[in-house]
Image (cartoon, rainbow, N blue to C red):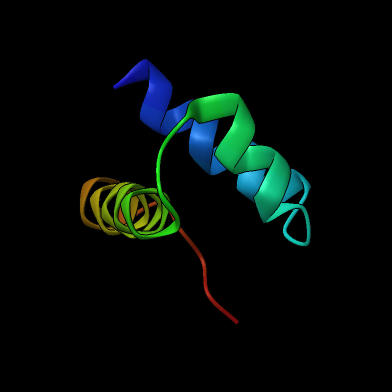
Length: 54
């Protein structure tokens, strides 16, 4: 769980630096994309009432 949030925050901070993300976390592009998408889906499902979308 903590690593998933780290991946999310890193990817949001540096979206064009995927190659560094691969080196830091040691996962494939596919794995990082799955983790990123899963954590976004979790956050939206968990906090949908407090999120405001314009």
